[in-house]
Each structure stands twice: as C-alpha cells, then as structure tokens.
Image (cartoon, rainbow, N blue to C red; front, side):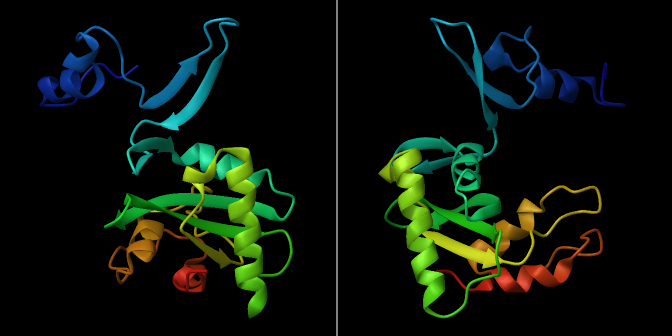
Length: 178
C-alpha cells in the first residue's frame, strides 16, 4: 500500500485519511450501504460520481445499471450537467445492442429507456437527455472517458487531449440529445 505522497506527506494524510473520518479510517473513494438485517453490502459507486437532482442524491452507477438491465442496451454511461430547475440534469450516453437509432426512433427509444429507468429506480432518476452512439469513447485500457462525456453534455467543445482514446470519432455521435 502507498504510504505517502513524495514530498507532501500532509496531502497523503488529508486525501486518504480525512478528518471527516476521524483521521484513522482509509477513504477508498467508493461508497456502499450495509443492510442492517442481512449484513450484505450494496456498492453505490464512486463517492465523487454522485448527482444532486432536485435535492435527491443519486449515484451514476445506479442509473447506469438500470439502463444496462434494459434488453435494448449494450452499454451506458451517465453524467450530470448544470440545470437551472433541477440543480443537475441526468444525461445518459447509450450504446444499443442494435443499430444506432435515427429519425423518429430516437425519441421513441429514448422515451422507452426513460420509462424503464423510472420503473427500475423511480421517476426522479429518469435521464433528462439520452444520447446514442455506436460505441463508448474509451481509453485503450477500456475505461470510459467521462470527462469528455461531461463536456459533450454541457455543450462545450472538446479541448482535452484525445490521443489516449481508442475511438475518438464516436464522441461526435453523442452531440445530439434525444
């Protein structure tokens, strides 16, 4: 295990053993809930991947799992973007098992996926926008590049380095919301 940050041991202590946890518990960066009856843990995802939608705190992993459970969906990623009404709006990036929808199919499938998430989690978790692509933008090691998806969701131009992405051309496919 890492024991310090070179040249800055205080940064290590504050980052991995924060005062909020008494300075003695290690912060792994993942959240979980323990069921009082069974003792089982439910992983809720990264503690920094939490959306605040109308005062409700939701993990992106929870919404992604609900979308991925739909028989139409091959892969999903969820990010938040600022929203004047809700604080944060849920934006879902979806790759379907079939071809990327076009025309009227875009709205129909997006509405179907919103209804699916509403049934699985609840109405507050329905994505405000659903964007479709042929594949997720990933690094060569297979990690979804969420920082770029956040930029796309906010309508910002991609200014980050795309050389580490295996398939940078798919980012443009996610430009139009449904």
